[in-house]
Image 1 (cartoon, rainbow, N blue to C red):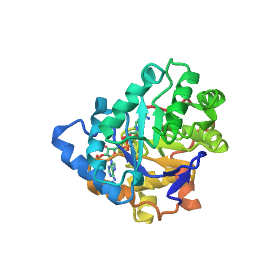
Image 2 (image 1 turned 120 degrees about the vertical axis):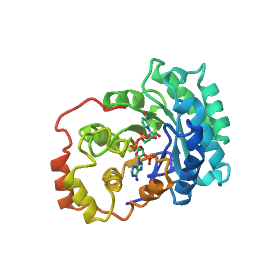
Image 3 (image 1 turned 135 degrees about the horizontal axis):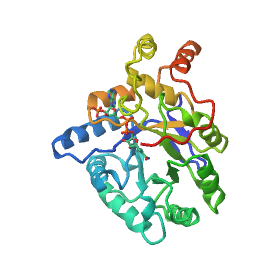
Amino acid sequence: MEKYIQLTNGVMMPRLGMGTWFLGENLHTRESEMEALRTGIEAGMRLIDTAEMYGNGLSEQLIGQVIRDYDRDSLFIVSKVLPGNAGRKRIRKSLNHSLKLLRTDYLDMYLLHWPGSIPLEETVMCMEELAAEGKIRAWGVSNFDTDEMEEVTSVPGGSHCAVNQVLYHLGSRGIEYDLLPWQERHNIPVMAYCPLAQAGSLRNGLVSNKKLLAVADKHEISVMQLLLVFVLQRDSVIAIPRSRKKEHVLENAKVWDVVLDKEDMEIINKEFPAPKRKVPLDIV
Ligand code: NDP
């Protein structure tokens, strides 16, 4: 499996990174969270995904404290703007605040967190300006279904939309029906959020499934690692598992050598089939 994917503007983006939702919010776990992030960076997980929404800036602040010790250019930092701030009036204030908390002067990727009421033409124009000024290296969207992807890519500058970050895990495969193939046709990678189904809590019976456990055992990996391998085996997918424990982060970083064979996929497809018709985009 390739560790990087080339975006349409030439930027190389790591395919495995760390999510940070809820990180930075609890004073008691702050130190271990910082250690988990450092461990991940040192184990090669150089993409960090955050958002202005996470802990109302606390996640970005935590990341800022960690990344100041590393060469900024070796990292790939993604943040997200809230839909209500994604217009001419407020986007610069949001971005500058994120940059300040993150202690950096640019983002590698800036995402519109979910579709909102500000016209996409306006959001895209702002993103394009920020990119031209070098404040962001690329921009994209999140929680967009196929029709919304059609819409955003058809406004002026919209063809520069670099990724769409959506919920995707082995127990929720709705995007395989049309969104994922659509994005592959348009060279727009999927950033899979909740790739671990929030440690299985998003799908009953997922992590306790005996057949999945047997596939994981066969490859001498955990079910969590199997969930990551499942999404990463598609070249166009990027995964951002979150963990506040360094042992888990190290486990999540070690998935590159596993290849699922035909027999494994038959088992997976039988236990957790992809839908055969359009289903609405899953969200958390
Ligand atoms: P994940 O699917 O990444 O699951 C996180 C959970 O898995 C935590 O409880 C964590 O616990 C546990 N975990 C992680 N690694 C292991 C392991 N090796 N073994 C056992 N348990 C493990 O959920 P998230 O919701 O956090 O999604 C990932 C990221 O995606 C977010 O953090 C965020 O950055 C992004 N996101 C984006 C959204 C959007 O709207 N764009 C929406 C939701 C998420 P522990 O800490 O104990 O390891």
